Image 1: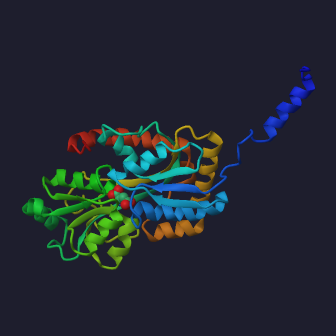
Image 2: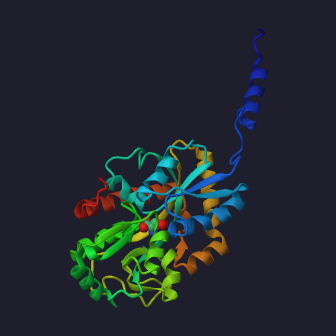
Image 3: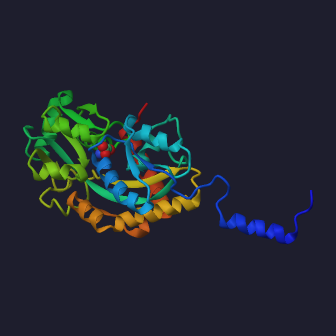
Length: 326
Ligand code: ASP
């Protein structure tokens, strides 16, 4: 076989740089699955569907929402951590990514190193809402009712690892009540039970509760945050209503499986940023009590920093409340 000339080698090198390697296709080459680890109709699903719509246009391929539910959001996360790392399977998750590494001492995936952060999405305040005919009209009366009813009082959540369960654990720990926890595959279905009057209380994001609070279909007691909710200013904070030191805000981030090539992650970050700048997304977020993060936060670096700090922030709290999945 004749030796290739230097010039021939250089030309081959250039060709390799210019064209994708054999078998490699431009990204995305097919629809992207956006895994939502909670049920359709709930707060994470609502945010995910808004993102999917705009990211589909930006990426030039459909971003298809799939609800992979169960086990407090860990099954959907596992699905993405173990997917082929090519950017065609991504995850929208929430504060669960900050608490699951402590709450779950056994998992079939790595809850920290199994992912590449793409960017933060939004921060959402929570509200404590109850069925309309609950015999309490403010937080003080609610606390008294929960204490007196013991396990006859029931509290809905989306399973250990969900924000509703964390909020419920913080509340019951703070007031010394022991209600019965009723887990659902997401707070979408849990809200249906509150509306139907079959469950007493739920702590959930404004992205779902705003509509029902405005429509008077639920009783709202407080928001467990430092500040009131700008779009629902009549709701007191838990501290104002007599329960200081009980704060939880839900954050959402977008993830790809660990090992996803950097240019693919960069393309997803670009697409996420475009979605968060979209006036329609901003308007629809505002209607459900939230806002996109700053563009500088919708980056892998800012996301990783925030996520790492959140794991450290929640570890001692979880140890104190003892909310473990095993
Ligand atoms: N809000 C839910 C939670 O409690 C999850 C959801 O359905 O979005 O974590």
